[in-house]
Length: 568
Image (cartoon, rainbow, N blue to C red; front, side, top):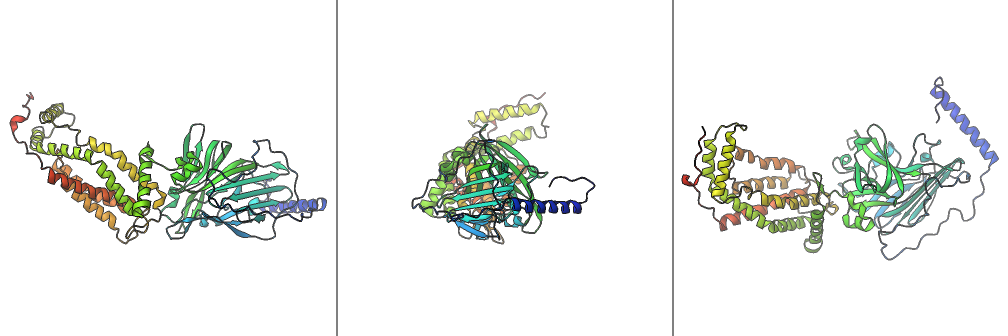
């Protein structure tokens, strides 16, 4: 409501508002009686079901959206609303969506093909938020919202198997929303129109209180607002903390804009039109009934908004068929470095192995990990052989370290020590980088596989032996995979020579299994299984090397060492 004079109390302003509203409604109904409904009003022809699976690239067409500012003023309709609340659902092969005509909103958006941590179908709507904020697809206005609030109104709803239309008018504010689904697809055509006194009223469609699977551990940390800016070909993601002091808005030519979590996305596809995204942070109770900030977003900005909406899994093959830009939603990077061209082939290999050979993603992880280790074995063998050579001259290196023992790091004689060490390596034909360089070349492959296991949606709910879900930590009271991993890490370190490392450093390295135990104890079971398999394969490779290639004779001949230099 407009701000009243400061000397008026809240009670006085409330009485004046109710009085004015009553006068306006009585006068309007006397001057403009509502026209009788047409005989066929409220009826729609149900679309015929298409037996063939439609392509994901084409959404159900909606009337073209006029250019901004070109929407003509509409005639003020009569009063249109429902007498009572109606709740109904639309079912497709992939969704069960529950609507309410109170506000023309969605109360539940269930993904039929995916389970949450409670083994129920995933509901992307955070139902705990419905008591605090308006449900998804409520109207969001910039500045003062119209009164009475259209989000609390009872809309007249007409619907069939795959579409729903909501209409409301109080004679001054008129709203219409339409939703049209595909039977075999993840695309929904949505349009919303709002007028005030016959003129277009800019607005957006909001989804607040969180998005995605709310049953995972710390769901708020995985949920982001996202938009892809065409002007600089860049994806922007916004955490909930960016709106902690109030809503923030971003506008431009976006390929898509909306919300995402680790495995699902709900984004509008404006198809090149200018659009605005407003981010919200709402205080919503968590499972312990403690308030936490959950993200929300509103997309739109015109009096008439018409979009294609994608709500579905972040599967890169699916996203590629809908809009290649959507693949940006899958984070293939590590420390800011893109691993896309390594990670995608690994992901394809993992899916092929699971679907064709093992029919289980746990065994597929083991096979693909073992395969990558075998392909990388020549590089690992080169590294192992270099380590063996380093081990053979370890007595000479130890003697050199004793010679310069206790020198400060900034002492000029450190340069003499390094020069003698390099001369020693050269004399015995050893490349000091031969041990680490080959392993560095294998690093991108193993990090990429690690990343694949973090974002592959097919791992959600995938079991393996005693593990119920490879995308989550084990549910046993004592998690076995991290414990076995620590044991294999210790065994691998004991088998692997560590030339050039002093005893204190070796003792520190023995803490590595405990560090990995702590790190992986809370990690997804699929990631632990991957690392554990790498350790087991590494142990087998080291054992084979030790058996087939005995270590070279230890060099103790001081004559082969470089002569001492005069330090005076």
